[in-house]
Amino acid sequence: MEKEQTKKAKGKVSEKMANSKFHSLFVDNLKDIYWAEKHLVKELPKMSASATSNVLKECIDDHLEETKEHVSRLEKAFEHLGLEPEAKKCEAMAGLVKEAHELIDETQDDSMVRDCGIILAAQKVEHYEIATYGSLAAWAQKMKHNNVAKLLLSTLEEEKNVDEKLTEIADDDVNEQGAEE
Ligand SMILES: [Fe+2]
Image (cartoon, rainbow, N blue to C red; front, side, top):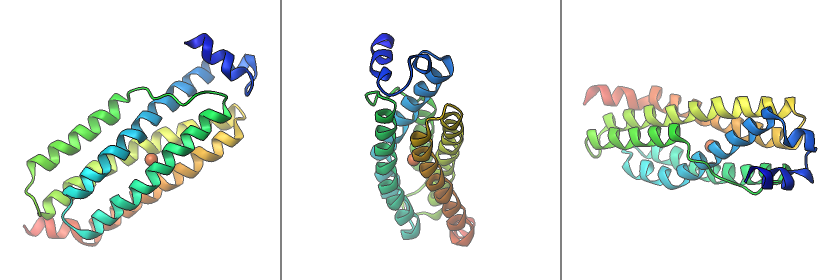
C-alpha cells in the first residue's frame, strides 16, 4: 500500500517528498480529517433534526452544505498530491459524535437545554477541526504544497466562522432560555 502510494505520488510530488516522514504524517492526517468530514455529512442532519430552535437548525444545515464542500476540497487536495482520496477512521471524531448522541439522549425533546448541549457538542467538533486544519495548512505551506494549503485555509476559515456563529447563538438566546427551563 505504502509503495503504491509512493508510486502514484511520484507524478505530483518529488520522490524525496513522497518518502519524507513529515509528508507521510501529513497524508495520514489528511485521511483522518477526510473520514471525519464524511462522518459529519452523515451525522449533522441528525443533530439538526434534534435541535429545538430554528436558528440552531439553520446554522447546522448551512454548515452541512459547507461540510460537503470540505469533503470535496480534501478530494482535490489528495488529487494535487497525486493520491487517491482515502479515509482513515478518526477515533476522536467518532467519540465526539458519540458524545453528541448521548447529550441528545439525556435531554428532553423540544427543550432549550438540549440546544445548549448540541452547541457544546458542535463546538467541540469545530475546535477539533480548527486544530487539525490549522496544523495541516501550516505543514502544507512548509512543504510548499501551495494549492493544498489554499484549500485547507479556506476550510479553516469556515470552521472558525461557524464556531463564532455557535457562540453568538448561545449568547443571544439559547443559554438564557436553557437556564430558565
Ligand atoms: Fe469541516
